[in-house]
Every structure is written in structure tokens, then in C-alpha cells.
Image (cartoon, rainbow, N blue to C red; front, side, top):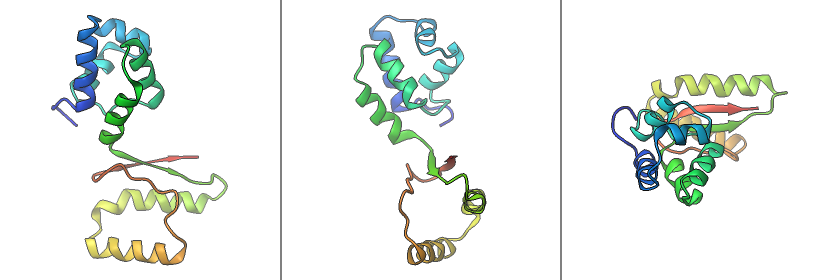
Amino acid sequence: MAGNASKFGRKVRELREKKKATLKELSEAVNKSINYISDIELGRRNPPKEEDIFKIAIFLDANPIELLALAVSEKSFVEINVNPEKIKHAELVVVMARTINELSDPHVEKLLEDLKNFGGMNGIESSGADSETTIKN
């Protein structure tokens, strides 16, 4: 996201300027630094967590659903829930996440096929290509 303002960031800035609010006022409302909010507006950071998006929307008198939709379309990570009692499962997910970009397309297709045949792909969400993986226990 480096450099080019994201749709989310542009929208936040547009709403903030329309309200005639400063970066400082918005940062205080969200309990984040001015630099953090500025980086979001300029596209140097991905959109924030859902709870912060709601805080931004409330402060800017904006539609939180619209902001959430923009944020979701731009997030560059995958969230995966792993049972904390199954350490080997978590290890597998971490190893796959760290090596996935090094695999050839045929290897990825084979892994997907094997996983689907073994037990399905329930609960796996991806928000796009070039994704990072987040594991929540």
C-alpha cells in the first residue's frame, strides 16, 4: 500500500475535511497517534481494525458499513482460526503461510487438491492476492 492513497484513506480524509476536523481531533477520537491516522489517509497503512473503523465513522458522522466495505476490500491479510490445543495444526499453518509465495502454481494446486480431498477448506477466508496470514487463537 506504500505511497498511493487507498480508497479507504481517501474517504476518511474526505469525510474529515468535510467535517472540518483536524488530524489531531480524529486521532484523539480513535485513540491513535496523528501519524497513524495520517498514514491511513495517505495509504501508507492498511485500514485499521473494525472497532477503530466504527470509532472513525462515529466521529465523522459517516456510514460505518460503507467504511467497513472499503476497508475489507483493501485488507492484505488472511485471518485463520486455529484451535490452540492443536499445536501441530498451528505449526502447519505458519509454515504454509511463510512458504506459500515460494511454491509454484502446480505445487499450490496439488496442495489445495490434497487438502480438499482430505477434509475440506471450511473456515478459510482470503481477502485477496498477495495476502499475509493472521492466526487468531
